[in-house]
Length: 249
Image 1 (cartoon, rainbow, N blue to C red):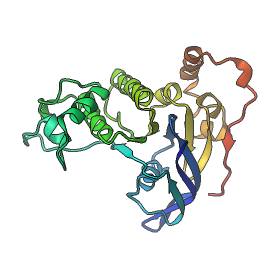
Image 2 (image 1 turned 120 degrees about the vertical axis):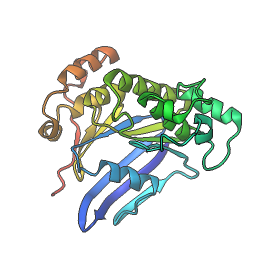
Image 3 (image 1 turned 60 degrees about the horizontal axis):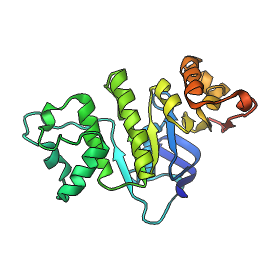
Image 4 (image 1 turned 90 degrees about the vertical axis):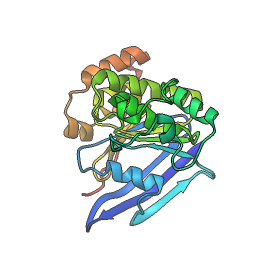
């Protein structure tokens, strides 16, 4: 089922066109990751998709009644402010206790409701943000570099939880990530963005694309070897090609 699509999307910020000619779609149940260098428009694209930024051109089509959960890069909370996890999740409106309990369990934090936000580790804090996004029982879960600042084991554990959430809820997941090794093992589809979509497709195919290698080199080959081993990919995909987009800069 198609959840959201963008056609001919362009965004101007401060007189600069940061995105142009972007076409993409997301279906229920798939995990899609957007990669690209700094300044490539990744966060801007997410803001447009969730409705926080208006495009200068193009059209966004959302499924009727689409519920979106959003996990930001980071969120600053005054450490001197006494606020429990449960209180934080009840902002801006109070939620049923059962809903809070279910969201925390889905995020992997079943017993953290009474804990103070200021006492959480980085990984726990991000999982609380995930729990907040899951309160809406989203059809589409969007994460903007949600593991920034976590160490590699923490990031891996967080993304494993995201895969479990997708399995449990049947939602689609759209992530922005700079962690290429994680992207290649956790995604059904990768979109390489640099102002426009340079290439897209299955991770092991995108990694062979010239546009991807021009931006990131070949440093993900080790991760891809592991990906193929874990997912049982054979060489029958060797003749596949990524969807390349040669839009003019």
